[in-house]
Length: 85
Image (cartoon, rainbow, N blue to C red):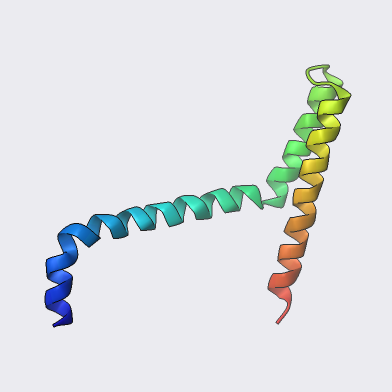
């Protein structure tokens, strides 16, 4: 009975399951980018360089720095939580 139900529901559920899989992959990639410590450090360096070149104000730099340092703190907390049994 389960196989028959799967076959009958496939035209509707197949595309839905495909969309769910794609959404999961996009979310996974976004999370990897958001919580990659090297990328966050790179952004910090980028903002410091932009400040030195006069492209942004010190206030803009401080706001960006605060956000990025918070993100680094969260990354460290997540990594520590993953190491705990």
